Length: 83
Image 1 (cartoon, rainbow, N blue to C red):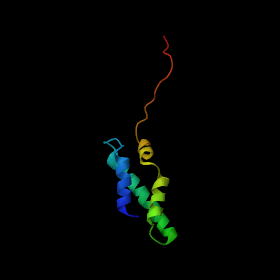
Image 2 (image 1 turned 30 degrees about the vertical axis):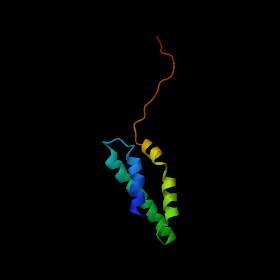
Image 3 (image 1 turned 60 degrees about the vertical axis):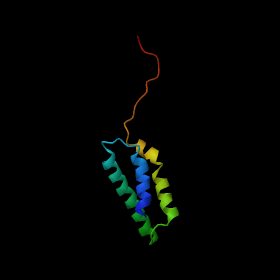
Image 4 (image 1 turned 135 degrees about the vertical axis):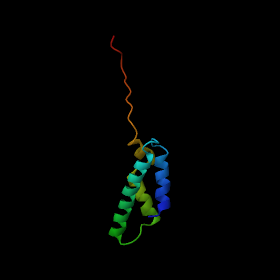
């Protein structure tokens, strides 16, 4: 898998991550993506082509949704206040 494709994907994820944890999260995601690509290449006995690379990233998830897993969840209370 080309690093350029992974770099562009991770850049999209990184834009949505909290600055304080961004580098650690991106390193973790890069490792996971590279391991997944390597496993597929071993299974196929060759390098992944562009379509297979894109499939891997699509299976990994939309960058906005992936980043959302690492953001703090904010809860919205709906209802009447008890007086």
